[in-house]
Amino acid sequence: MLESYRDLKVRQRAIEMTLAIYRATTGFPKEELFGLTTQIRRAGVSVASNIAEGYGRNSRGEYKQFLGMARGSNLEVQTQLFIATELDYGNPSSLKATESLSTEVERMLNSLIAKL
Image (cartoon, rainbow, N blue to C red; front, top):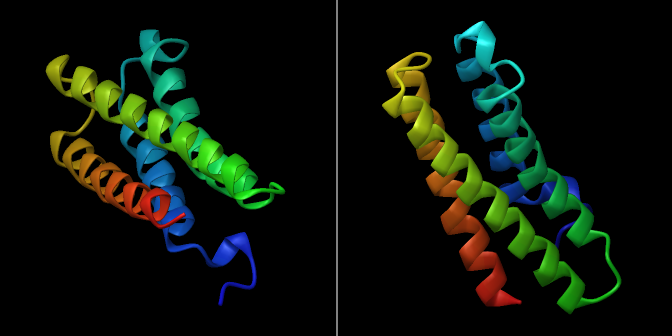
């Protein structure tokens, strides 16, 4: 049994993904600081944050709703990583590794939502 939202594997993996996003975006062009860089970082932070917030809600329905928001933010991350790759921003292997983490988070979220 989980003692805390901190024990959720999907939250832990989402945090790993967010850290990878921050590392990957340090190489983005400076003119993107208030564009794609900020947008992808915010979406990444939103994934883990919504997982945690949903865990703290009072009902299963609210929890599922926040997990759905986390899933949506994660799909934003995937879209933004694709755009960054197409624009040749950052390190391609770093972006690919971050995308793999995002895909793993997506599978984990889908599984958790289905179990609720």
